[in-house]
Length: 526
Image (cartoon, rainbow, N blue to C red; front, top):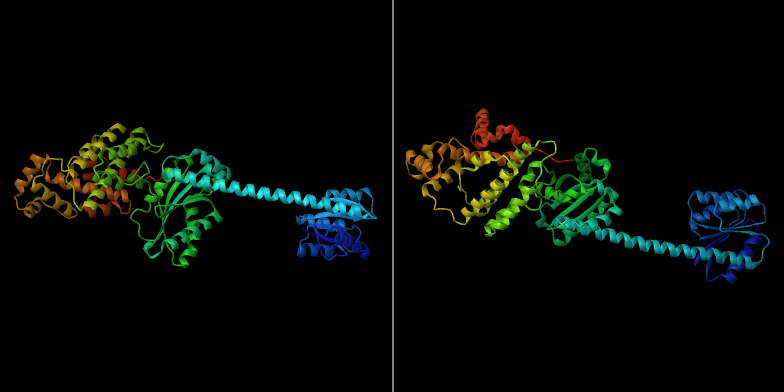
């Protein structure tokens, strides 16, 4: 049923029109009290929201055409039937320009009035039908876009991007072609929240993000992942500053409600590299326990350049006796890892072999943490490292190191001399202080001469080389963390003299400390 209002300054005309509607169109039309001038018509339309208005042109004050023009300027969706004694062409022309649905001349027969109103009702029916169909189609299209976004997001986690789902989602979010920033959110003190509370928090967060920025969100393994898609303008500006402001805005309400997040953020990623963004945002949270926003630093990619797992995955594979799986996994990392375009080919090899060294050291560290043991598996790590001069050398070296680590875990290496094993453990526990040969030998109950001979005959190394190897491994891991200065790192590993630290590091690895820090500090933000 549609609502109708009559606007005419002649009371008898209003009564006639109302009588016709009441007697012949009562099933289709609900009458609103008539008005007698243009100003009253505007007020009634605003307050009562009629669907149809029968309007006389000549009314006191504001005439009918002027009132209709004001309504059109306000974008009021109202069907107008002009009902007037004026037959001038100029009036009819203006009425049509203003979108009048019909133009009736007084006096007229009731059949004309009824036909005109029914004609307008038919128009309204058609519009309602089209609007409903459009809304249904829009809802279905939106649902399709949301499903395609979820499907595409999940395919990224599986490292098998669904390009069909991406192409569908792109239609609803053209800015995705410029890429975006991945974020990974964890609840601080998660154990204090129930599963239902956590789901509610993440649901609210998703809604809030979507209200301020194009995005895709997905909860995966208790982490809330969100891909921010802010568009090309943000890509060309300070992305970190933009994201920091956005995160601060999003977290402000939650902070008031004592809900705090640990948030990891990737660098800016184009669509073809968003898989890496997932892993970068996850790695940025590694070992974090304080709420706040943590940006991915380039050296964190060392933990997993292929962006699918962390060194913990490789360590677990070895512990579960899956050497071949771990080797394939490691090969995939360093076969696919590429260096920045502004580096020369040889510089790229140097950077990648540093990444490989840190990766291997972190795998070993994960194993030591899980098993609560310290490995003394070989003392030629840095000798082989210096020999690397190509990408193929990196692949061979990492495979060899992984295999030797596996053999150590599987007890497949020849039995270790107990004195060397004890000496290794003592060095690993005390490398940070001044550590003379005599102290270590005394701690295991043999003479310094005998310990030196054992190391030379069975390990083909010296005591100084053994200590240096341990210290430089620790230094490389600390450099990768990028939390301490070179001076601080030197003091932490037993080299308080900075110039001596530089000299020993260069002799052991073949690389300058400053170069290693530069490569490990590379931050991919474009």
